[in-house]
Image 1 (cartoon, helix red, strand yellow):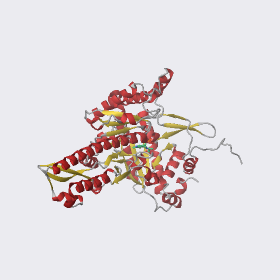
Image 2: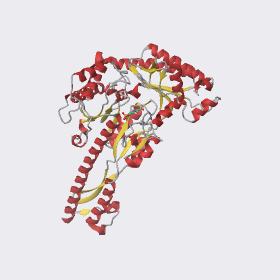
Image 3: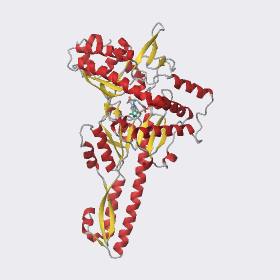
Length: 523
Ligand code: F0G
């Protein structure tokens, strides 16, 4: 019996145990480009080809030399890092540079204002909070207008105007109750609408983070449901049913009643109530299993959201910063955002920073006075973000070309493997350096070892453990698509690395095809 804590693992030890059981819990001691190193029992450095890429935060690779040199210079120069409530020229420059790049790529010219944060989920929540502030202000303006119309109706009736008979009927009241009865019924109905919590829209398979608000935008029930009482809810839209979005919007359609006085008559009209706070979507779903959103779905989102005046939040936290072969993956499918979110690679693999960009036409400057974070816009992260943008933009966008070309090369290797192992590989997909290989679920295999892990939903993890231990390649399935291995290497990916991936994946596919579980599953 001791109460000491020396040597006890207290930082999420259960997760470590789970990772250990799949053989993927390795401590890395050094990192560069696409390589992580660990030390074996003899203290020798062992290189591992890292395809996890910080789950997408390493478009420039681990410890990019120019980013590291810049970080060193900043620290050596005593650059102010925390100087809250003072001008922040570096954050302003990041915002200006982001605008320049987005305008070039989309052809739009409207400015986006920037609200900085520290993590992906935080940027999503800043965007969503802003959208709700905006919705609230629109609702307040609407309520004011309705009150003015009510007063006019009352005055008009006092001066002899008539009330349309249908008005009483629609409001569920009778002509004998007079204008006051009608007003009371209308206000009761409107108050009920105004008290409704906002609703969000997102595609099935969405992942937008795990904080209280953002986890409700995340489709995976295991992540979302235990916390659903904490925040506003989302209606999830299947991406493969063209009319599903319009149908959901129809189902949830809410109206507010307005008493309009015209030509000496008071009428009751219905006006749309802005129930939907935002449609939030990733142009390429990452955690959902590398699913590229189709142009048709994107167009439908745009069309319906415009119709109901619901802002579109395009979450480029994983797909953005050049990973797709363009700065914004959404630009490749013609999807335009009222809000963009960026994080992950924005910090160059060194700093933690994120940003919500808000289109001027939607922007509410009041937000700046009610939302903040101690660490947002700090001098260090902002200057690292600026350097990262400079590196991506250098040589006429060489980084985007690299992401596209190397991604195409790796994808064609994956496609050949799929063609050779159709009974093992179900699908390969993605864009640029955001690729996935999905395995068939193998519940029907003759190998009892493989069947057991497949039935437990661990096939992807066991394949990952095998790739790490046998081939020194680090890759993971996603939490929401457990048979899909996700590959997000940096733009430094070279032919030798692609060849290693090819050999390792072919070897794994042979084992699974031959139902040789003893060689796949580690004791
Ligand atoms: N949005 C997207 C599209 C993401 O992929 C992630 C994180 C987040 C938001 C949340 O960012 O972790 O910085 O708070 N995705 C990781 C993944 C964790 O597994 O794909 P965060």
